[in-house]
Each structure stands twice: as C-alpha cells, then as structure tokens.
Length: 339
Image (cartoon, rainbow, N blue to C red; front, side, top):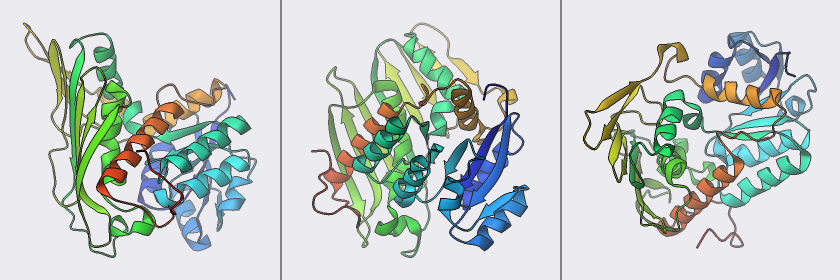
C-alpha cells in the first residue's frame, strides 16, 4: 500500500459524510470509490454529487467490497457499534466518527474486534490531528508552561432544537454531552489523561437527555479540568491550559483553532497561528491523512488518536452520564456505567 492510492468507502450520506468526502476527494493519494446508505436513492444522489463510482443501498454490500481499503463510518453515533462492527467483521479498516459509540461497553467491543482481526480502527477525533493542536500539545509536553494544573474548555450552541430533532431523541443518543461535550472532555484528556474522579451536573430535557452539562474532572496530582457543553446557549467555545509557569489560551473554536496565545512567566505573549498551507481550519483532511499514513505504514492504530485514549474518554463520558442520570434505551439494566 506504500505506493498506491488509499481507496475509501463512505458509510452514510448525511452532513458530516458530505463534509468529509468533500475534503478527501481531491486529497493526493486518496480515492473515494464507493458509498452506502440504507436508501439506494440517497446513495446514488451522494455518489453523483461527488463523482463516486459505486453506490450501495445497504451497508453490507459496502462492507464486503474488497476494492476498499478503509471505510469512514458517518452514521449517527447510536449506529456506530453496528456499522463499524459490520465493517470490521468483513475485514475492512475503519475510521469511525465521534463520539466513538454510545457507551464504553460498545467501544470496548469494537476495539476488541479490531484488535482480534488485525484491522485498523480510529475514532474520527479530528481535533487531535489538527496541526495547531498538535503544536500546542508539543509545547505543553516540552514544559513550555510548566506542570499543567488546570484545563478549561466549553462548547455550546444556541439551537433551538425542537423535540423532534435528533439531539433531543434518546434513541439516537441525544443530548449535549455526546455531540458537543466530547470535545472539551477529549481536549482535557489530551493534556491531562484520564481523571481519577468525576463530578457533574446537568439540566435535562423532558425526553431525558442533557440540555447542558458541566463537569469537574480531578486528578491524583491535584490537577483539575472544568468542561461545559450546551445546546441551549452559544458559548465562546474557548479553551485555556494553565501551568505552574504560564498559560495557553485558545480564544475561539478551540477544537479547530486559527491561533492560540502562549503566556510564559516573565516573557511577552507569543501568538501561534495556523499555517495557511494546511488548508481551512474546518477541514477534516488531517484525520484522513493520518489514516492513510498509518495504513501505508502497516499500523492498526494511530499514535495521534490511540484506541486506549478513545476508551478513556468513553469511560469519562459514561461517568458523567451516570452522575447526571442520562441512560439511553439500548442500555438495559445490566449495563452499569462507570461508578
């Protein structure tokens, strides 16, 4: 595979699938060869839009297509376990949208399946692949602000979302936490790792999903992370990392920033800006590039988005849901979230 194009299949035809495909169709070394939907008409319309050769009206046909190197799963997250599992069972490599699954149990099942089959699997946490976020992490890891003591991050949108919207539907894994809160939690754990304890509060909708949630993640070394998500108010979508000798602020859009500011004790602030050569900051191409790099290198996991890190985030999301009292219909009484 080191020399040939990586052949992509797209599973689902919604908005995020269209965004990803638009960013990949012109990517050097990538070729989108097939798309699948539960509707043959939807698959064909999507294929015609992006010049894709094969369109399938069912997921199984895509999973069994041996002319595909990797499948991008872009269904609602309530279907990630089924869709990604089908592809892995058929021997395909998988990039699965975030949040990875509804809960830790489903995530563990997918990871075990991929590792057992020797297939590549990665959560599409594009934030981790963003060049500027990678620069920020490198600075933190190199001690630019000393020992990290606090992380703060928020992500909120104003909506309004009517009761019929998927974000209000428990059967679709609705709520602010899994759709939006996964970003602040993932950002905090990128820099601090998995917390030792979780405290959380939320305002719930009549349907039983969280409208907004705040959580405090605590660590054995005394570090803290404060994260917030909302679908009833547009927050600033900022992040800040404070260390023993300085601070890094991301003033807006922390999960795909155009700049951040480094404050070091005794020095003038330094601004780090995104390189225009990396493309639009909203581009999903960086995660596709990482998948293709890993496949060509014969890797089954990405060091940028490791599966153990994905599982750690899912443990935290489960713990937050346990604290705020959100349980989805598919989680029967035998499923016990993280205590």
